[in-house]
Image (cartoon, rainbow, N blue to C red):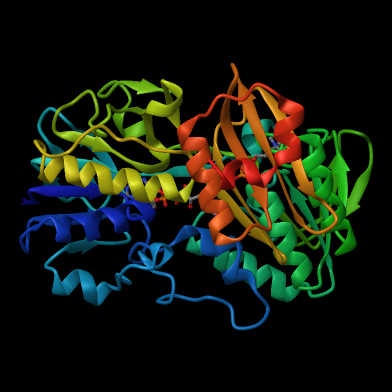
Length: 426
Ligand code: FDA
Ligand code: NAD
């Protein structure tokens, strides 16, 4: 027994929502499309979970952040899927896929067949146990990947007002959660192994601005060390964390953000993998003609850099989904995906955007005191990346455009002096 669809989207996150909207725009007929998701709710904008969802006043709650509010498009509520004849199979994990037979098997024992499969399984949070630390299951140790995690974090946060939180990891989750916890008047200590925060992207100079800003909000930093074990009370709750440098931090709440792994396991041995993800071509098509992959799980050719990359950001999930659907529905019309990597974050009253690639030499510009500053990255004589904090819409558009043009840069000192004007006048 089973159902058959023309198109099946496996995974119900950001990419799935944007793909569904594009399918309807390209004229999918009622009954042709199905989305299968382990999560019990329709696709939503995941970035809200570490920001608006954690606010003490008027926090964001569904249905307000269903996709595709992130791009100011339609808000796809469960009613929208119904009206468009799209089958939402929620709260259902797919446990195996046979790409040769074009069939999926769900954990509830149903077989669903497809003509075209769009893989949008995203990624899972890495667990402390994978780094040799036990105790992640304690009720006051929180990860943040999905709505259930976010609800758990809010519950623990509310039970420890004015208490101590230890945030493990100095990447996106660590920085955004630390800010949100501080806004909730919790004492936050951020612990990470690198010499400065956001080590994958920030230069030491950029990082020092944010670290000082966080410190002004009461957040403490413990750098260059990692968690080695937890101390538990008699009920199994974590009371403190032990660090490799020998110190101990009291903890009513622990948030862990130590990176992700793409959800590729259903396809190992069936599809070509690269860079930890599922390898696709410029049409987001995998090594099997009937299977496409988008979002965090896809490793795609980034034309601008001439190499395959896997990106873990919402803009790439949205745009790769749209591109894949165009390639599926209008194969003759659609070209190769030409994507300019774009990352952003918002914490406290701060807001930055980054475009391109952070390789080569960084040239800083702007006024750190006024709060509008940035950096360009120059590699092999060309501008390849741009970062800006506190910019206007026009300024962000200008750095995006400049980066996509990859202009030659000869004099780095002059570029630093020109600063934003370089991008604004290109
Ligand atoms: P996504 O993870 O959104 O969805 C995957 C879906 O597949 C999930 O619903 C999952 O349950 C489902 N699934 C997986 N395996 C399955 C199976 N076997 N069976 C059924 N369902 C299955 N980016 C950014 O640029 N700016 C930002 O501010 C933020 N902020 C942010 C905050 C937080 C808390 C997180 C966790 C992430 C961000 N991101 C971000 C990253 C961004 O959210 C991420 O890149 C996208 O959600 C990726 O979209 P996908 O659809 O690829 O995966
Ligand atoms: P990340 O890759 O941004 O950061 C991981 C951090 O883990 C590193 O910076 C490091 O400090 C730390 N780390 C690594 N090993 C460690 C160890 N053994 N002990 C302690 N710390 C260790 O990943 P993340 O912050 O977990 O974010 C998860 C995903 O969510 C990423 O894909 C990220 O892009 C996405 N996300 C993006 C945004 C955004 O774009 N604004 C916001 C939130 C989440």
